[in-house]
Length: 278
Image 1 (tube, rainbow, N blue to C red):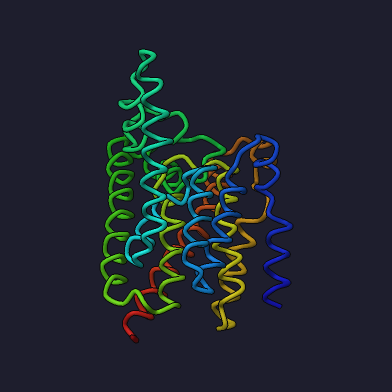
Image 2 (image 1 turned 180 degrees about the vertical axis):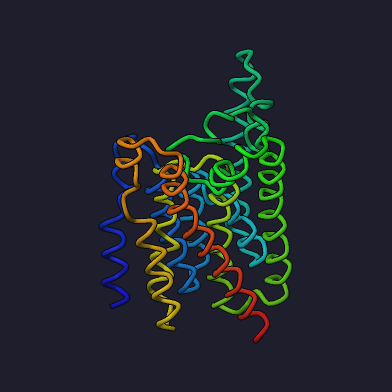
């Protein structure tokens, strides 16, 4: 039933239609990451690192996974990562800098979420980030309150990454904790970022598929399946387009954000419990 459920979720994942229609690469980046996870399960460290780099090359959604490879001392992956940053990022930005474009400044403004994308981050119907849900609840009350909650959440994700990394570094040899920590770092980016379009949700597939296949506890497996189906289902855009109710927009965003938050908390708890037992 685990293999069947994993295949079913993959084949019915509605966000793939948005991904393919827009010509995005989240799904391709996710597939390379899935291979990286597969090779990590069988301790093929060089292949795991290679496929992670290939995932980053298509789209840097798995950027935070660098913490996993650093703490597991995968020198091959880290060296490739540094070369990737130098050759592609610095080289790419440097080229435009020579053309008179402030490429480095704009790059770091976007990385640090300092760019003003308010119209996309609050009230936008195709943004399924946690930040978008905060915008639905808090922005109508007070823009200042929303900005505070938004920045607090971004800081919280980074703090959680740091705390889990510290815990993991004390016992990085246990295979279970390694896989859960890898998944935790992988999904931290969509939890952190303020703009998560429907096509970006396809990057959750490697985590969903892995959890559906490795989870032995039936209650936990059912929880993961429910979250997977919530992410796989079409959005309520049709109903919102007909009735134009703000409550429907909040519900539409919430139905995609809640399973992301639930799975993130699940991974956090899973790592904590495994490391405590060991």
